[in-house]
Length: 293
Image (tube, rainbow, N blue to C red; front, top):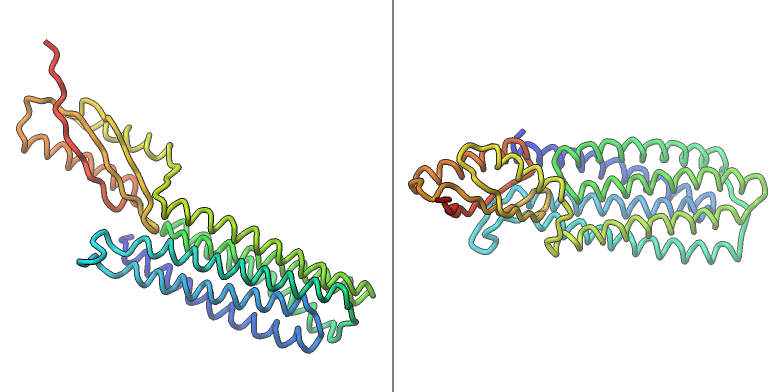
């Protein structure tokens, strides 16, 4: 599957995510206000934040389809990582707000209403979030999208939160009214933990950190097996959005013609990019090997 088709698949998944999340968040906020459940309202606001995050992911994926131009000569791929960081920051702010509201509710607990509706909605929401997370995570792996991966993590968090809300509501209807506020606090802490992970990963990528030792070793092995390559001196990799950009230094027989050396380099690039589809660009520097007398 080529780059355009991969990104288009990510866009389709993100649109489904937005529609699902907006529907669930609307229902949870409405039922949360009717029942008086701070945990359900918090879960609804958290879900609305997830929907906003999915909108940002959608924008980022659409930007990836833009070709390089005079300003962005290496393409717009890092916009996807930047978008992922913005989404994670928004998620962390929502987590702080939910925690604050839950603390207030803890000190003024009250009886909740509409038990059947709240329990049913929290159960359906939990199942929907986990299914959505699996769908998004699978697609994120296929297209190598960090922002979609972050979005999948957000759905996991929402699924866990909805499960906690379900349990807390059950306890609240049994007379343990503090359970609702405690569930809101736990949900907020889960949101903050997932946000921290996403912000950290995005920051490392924007700083060109690539902890991909195994992948570098694989690239070296592919290059060494190409006829004419005497030595692979160095392989440098960095992530740019869902793709990898690389540089490689190889040594060939110093007696070869420039044309033959270029053919060897072309063959190395062809094989590496064939076996590692995420590699968008590989720049190969050729050096003459010293001939032993």
